[in-house]
Amino acid sequence: MGELDGLTAVVTGGAAGIGLATARRLAASGASVGVLDRAVDDAPSDLFAVQCDVTDSDAVVAAVAAVADRFGGLDILVNNAGIGAAGTVEDNSDAEWHHVYDVNVVGMVRASRAALPFLRRSQHAAIVNVCSIAATAGLPQRALYSATKGAVLSLTQAMAADHLPEGIRVNAVNPGTADTPWVTRLLEAAPDPAAERAALEARQPTGRLVPPDDIAAAIAYLAGPAAGSVTGTTISVDGGMQALRLRK
Ligand code: NAD
Image 1: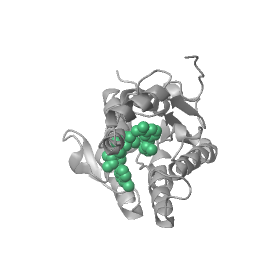
Image 2: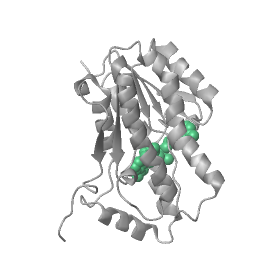
Image 3: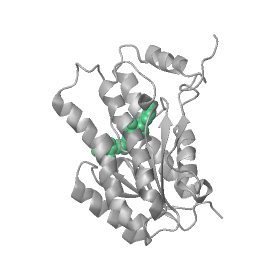
């Protein structure tokens, strides 16, 4: 018996990285899983993947309905799709600010709006938002990205308050720097990728980047009935980066 037997989940941005690890983890726990991604060609062929950009309201509504139709309802939404942005507050154009907010914040709003009518009919309804340590720690060169993740943190708490009376729990995970295609792209763009990777690892108290499977495990916990009394909170999966001050 899997922890999530009989439940259905949607994972946005589920074709790669943390989203893919989460889709795999939820499926291994017994859930039926549909992934929504703007790049489904990259998704493993055994996943039920629906092409969908979270900036397109109509596409999000149709994609969530397609997953619910296929599996006969919806119990879990993992709002994971997100993009990065580098720079100080001087470095990004207004258009970049609007676009990154549109994906990272309004994208979660669109998917949640589309999922709520289905979640209201579930006995085990949960939303998990993928936030970031950037919401709770000041990181250099991440003004725009951090602002979007701060918004995700507040949005999570507001949604948890709004939807608790309907029996829908809303929580977030705060990953630290994770070993995903996103970080691989960042490293490849650095003048010295090996040195950049070593610097990122050194920032982690654990001395290593966070494996996506560790984040997926926290998401699966928050999404499942075992977390029935957990709402409006966050789990940090950051190798201790937020809370620990180690002596060298
Ligand atoms: P990734 O780039 O490796 O994978 C992201 C997936 O989301 C891709 O499949 C991509 O196609 C999809 N996606 C991107 N924009 C989309 C859109 N507009 N509509 C639909 N799908 C879209 O990224 P990742 O590292 O796995 O990050 C996933 C989430 O985790 C993001 O919200 C990110 O902010 C957060 N996060 C990542 C890290 C990290 O270090 N990698 C740390 C903290 C938080």
